[in-house]
Length: 348
Ligand code: BGC
Image 1 (cartoon, rainbow, N blue to C red):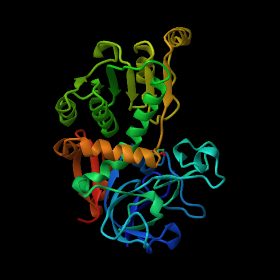
Image 2: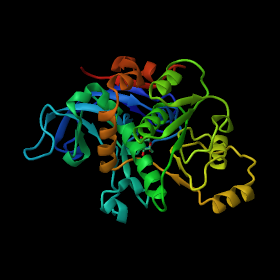
Image 3: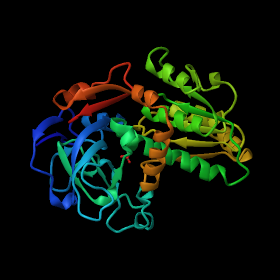
Image 4: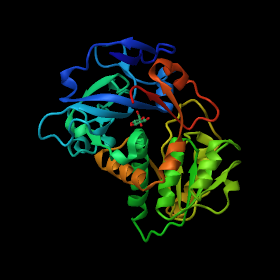
């Protein structure tokens, strides 16, 4: 069968390979892959900056945002032949640490977790894959091919969960949220902010195209320029760019008691001039919290699925800005100015 593979940490090594059928050791559920979403992490892996092959191998099957149809499942499993499913990305570490032991692998404490398509486990961008029943999440058939948005939605649902858990340390009645970055993560963060009844503001660089339109269609406000230009200070910031200067700007311009959630994985090597004393002082005097958030556990996939089910399907449809057949995979990884979410299609 065909699979999109890459030699991690080697730029330009991605190619469409002929590989064997998925090994039984991956799990008893056999899935036909329908679609794979492409995200910044995939582009980083393909550029040679991130990713780990499975132990003893050079190459990794790419793809962690998936949608598939079950071809075969053991009797008694929660998924059955014909179901649409999304594969969970992370697997708990083998020790396991306290968090992995209770299904909170997104909080793995020893770094020995694995991730399909990213870290030491083949991903889903092959014509078929196998998976453990507990790591296949059933998708509402009403969502159809938009189910491919569930993995990024799970990551955003986790970020909102963190914000709310921290916010609820005291009386918490947030009114205004700022989302930095209008990529798929930022737009899904804006969607979930609007669903919570917040006055949502989204900051990005582009002035035309799908992003401003998608933000306006949510009833949120789109801004370009600096964090200060977005107006009143927010109670919640969901930072989705990983751009250091924006991260610090966002931390400096928040309402008392605000929660700033960082979701963008940045590369190192850039230094900034920051008035650390002033930042410390305002964070202390105003009880501000900054929290990093990565990955998602099963509860977050459920929360992401609920958010997608409540969203306007025509809005979600516009998040998928390009669909590319597997044979043209390199077009999918080649970022275009008006891209939001690009999807590789493997089957109908
Ligand atoms: C994925 C997460 C993963 C993270 C770090 C993201 O792109 O969506 O599931 O944990 O990368 O590898």
